[in-house]
Length: 116
Image: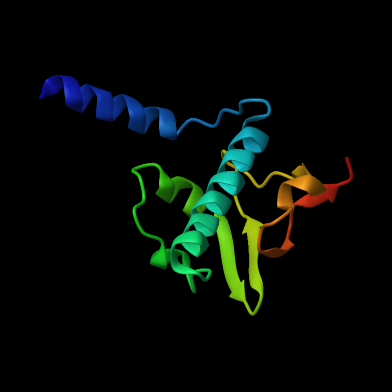
């Protein structure tokens, strides 16, 4: 039990530290955005329509709440809008290839699409 208490105290102390890891916002932002899309698109495949809210997503893993809390989702008539709100600690500016969104229901986003 003391081992777990020490680990918890260590994590709490580190969480109060203000340290930056170069590129972490971009890497985590990419992971958050791509993982959220995967869960949203899987829901459409299984149910025939996009979820009204992210709370409707089923069969989530332990880590899925991380990426879902890092995005803002809005269903619209013919797809959805998805905005990246957080990477590691801040809000990154990301660029994705236009090819990435091919076949997806994303209509509006704060991600920049670039030509290949």
